Image 1 (cartoon, rainbow, N blue to C red):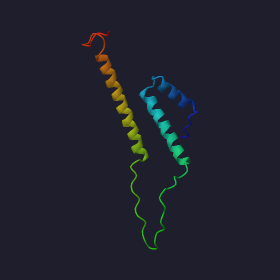
Image 2: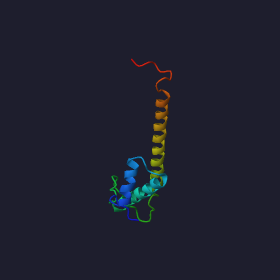
Image 3: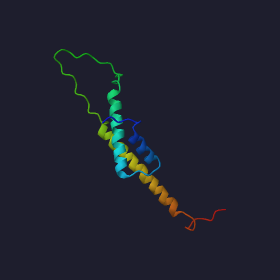
Image 4: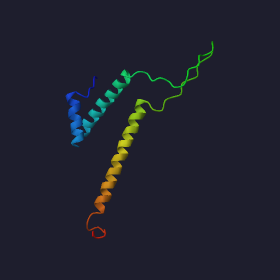
Length: 111
């Protein structure tokens, strides 16, 4: 799937998102397109240069096992999903609090 930010479907979905008129199906499709863009960018990116010097291995010795990476694509996606959900819950809570403190609700009169 060759995703591109200039594709008409991507532009349409981003416009729907910005105007807050996006459906759940469109949001899922947009998430898939953005995920493909990130994967394409990672595939094209040059490998990162390690800041630690590499020590040549002694003949007959095994290299140390690589530590498992915590931030793989799936974990990053879930982290972003939870971050977005948390922001949505905070916004909804703030909106409810403002609505509950509207005029006529035990609030002091404004000067």
